[in-house]
Length: 173
Length: 418
Image 1: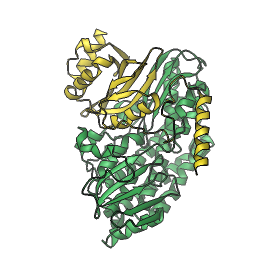
Image 2 (image 1 turned 120 degrees about the vertical axis):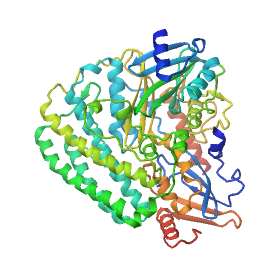
Image 3 (image 1 turned 90 degrees about the vertical axis):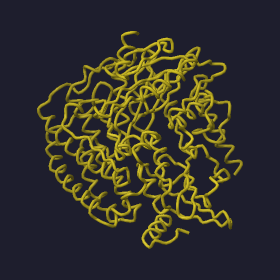
Image 4 (image 1 turned 30 degrees about the vertical axis):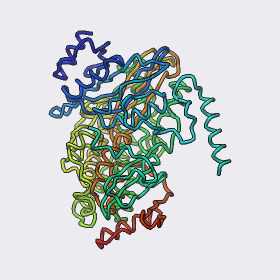
């Protein structure tokens, strides 16, 4: 990990405190995976945004593991003089499955708004201090407790729910 | 940082949480010709000027990500291009690159297969950009240009059809390579067609830069400064029109983009004309690249398809490509079986919405069609705009043509929209 950390620090031109980082993986030349826990993620992102000047957030992915949720912020570090981008996948790990909560990164990225609401929709993960954490993509009639991208819901189940919604909508009209 | 972009959090459709100085609220959508996935725009106006704009999305959820978890990696190769109707090849390209990488066959893909993939991508960029500036001209009230550009677009559509058998969904790629070759006879047939298309696009460029009636509709309209662009993070031509010189083909090269001669196009003005010029110049670059690729194909031989086992070993990979509309990003996780554990797709338009809303601030209502078009949303027809006069409660329902006509008249004769 320390060799990768050194390389990333060299590219970003900052010092990243080792205690905030769980793991760093070099995927390929100029492409890194950074893992950090829920507790430290906000602090580490603050350093990346304010000191290293990472301003581009491409998207956020939610990942369901056996015992925890992971959230992946796909960041790009942009070096304008060289027309170059360094992709950094910022993983927030150890999000509790029973009570999924994680800090919102909306303070750093305006575009985090839509992406975090999308994850909230599909996985039911709460982003603390998000000013408007409401449904973004799922239809209005969709049941509140069904989080469709969780593994507990199979394809057939999702189909049934969708058909039910359509039926109810027809009856109401 | 979010304070100045607070308007995005107001998604109440009845306008009850509208900014205090707005006197009218214009509702556009959800299924509206000016929205990518059917989107609902709420535009708060004071007189003729826009105070704030807001958006609601999510009217066309097809569940592709969930469906992909229930199909094999091989089946998904044909599902993933359906994510978008126009830029299908680029979605397929990223998907096959994710699978190539996870399966560990990245090094076995021949140069010839990579060149054919690139031809498909560049041909798609050409037809997507020509389609876009045709519709832009239509929204600006210059229908002649729509007809001219769409007539000329048929040239590249014919080439794509000849090479792949399909007009808009070529589906040439497979994990491990490509499924069809481009034989020499077909390449020879395509070359004069590309020359002809280049001449036509040069003429289109002349029209957009010299014809006053269209230029005046685009110049200094919806300016997005570089600072605002950095905050709202637009991607693709929207960002490159505002002086952010990032094109993934240059900034993080994939396939053989680092081995082919081409120039990065970017403008610094930030208005709609700048994004238009970015796209027209890119079209010319792409045509030039298509010709180069055809020339290189003559001297390159190699296997078209490397073998990929159906079971993909555990791992995850994030890959990106420059779609015609901007940065397209896929993130795939494999769990050792023949189906994906999780697959995430983000199409470019979602990343461009913030910047487009920012563009609208302080602009005329008459410029809205052009600004909404600027980030290249896809087309879905048949919906209306409802305009409500808050004081009198009077409702006006307009279809697309009426809205465009009113906007054009208001601009042309400098009179009020209502």
